[in-house]
Amino acid sequence: MLGRLIYSSTALCDAAEGLRICVEARQANAARQITGALYLADNLFFQYLEGEEVQLATLVNRIHKDKRHSNCAVLDSRLISQPIFKSWPMAWLPRTVQTDLLTQAVVPRGSNPAAIDGTTAGTLFLALSQSAEHH
Image 1 (cartoon, rainbow, N blue to C red):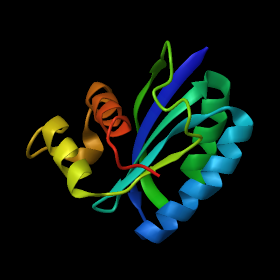
Image 2 (tube, rainbow, N blue to C red):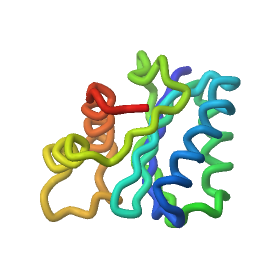
Image 3 (spheres, helix red, strand yellow):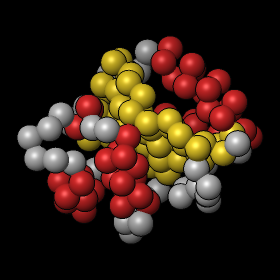
Image 4 (cartoon, one colour):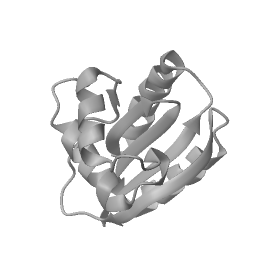
């Protein structure tokens, strides 16, 4: 069954290393038919993954062990009918004025972005997927 998984974590690396993570993930994810996006802002990673549930479970176990971040928390895990990042094995969503505005519009003011609920996280990634700036 097709599922999605969204998590947040504290980045222990800079944006250049985040982009390298994304490039590595593109190669690995393409082989596993996993798609998604990685967003880094204010030392927080947000990652949206979609694919077969078994593949996602295996991947999230590896992600939890990665030393380039800490405090990994799954925000949402659910079945989906279709992917929103279907053509991207891993999109890099750089922090821009546009992504900041989208985040501010979706994440409640004054809340901890790392603790948003799954529905809000999904809405944020849907908005980011439709933005013009992704690599």
